[in-house]
Amino acid sequence: MRISAAWMTLAIIALGFVSAAAAPASVTVKLNAQNGSGENGSATLTDTMGGITVVISLSGAPSSAQPAHVHDGTCGDLKGVAYALKDVVNGSSTTVLQGTTVAALTAKPYAINVHESASNLGKYVACGDVTASSSM
Ligand SMILES: [Cu+2]
Image (spheres, rainbow, N blue to C red):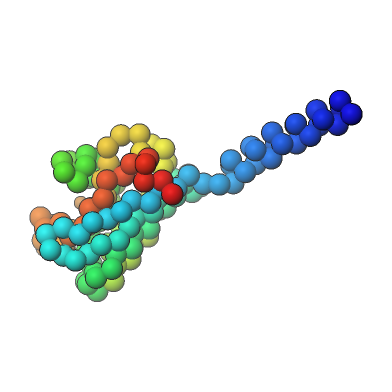
């Protein structure tokens, strides 16, 4: 009985490791419309092999390309571009970023923002702060 209980404990520990490895870390960032754009939605960051996948989904976005980035800082105090993301087209963008993790991007202030167009980068249409508390 004592031995089987020990094996059960080992099995439970092993299962714990497997499920921890299989469940990727993910955060969903709420993107709020800015400057009257009406473009609201989300960006979901998920750990993937060697990096993360960033999926942006905005409602009310135009069919024209809208540049998107991960910036250092916050929406209230936006700094330089940390990572360029694929342009948002029809409200959708999916980018694989190599060499970073969800944990790294939630460890210090980053924000995801979307610009009106390449020719009008100065107008922001949506932004969201990347924080660990946005985990879902
Ligand atoms: Cu930007």
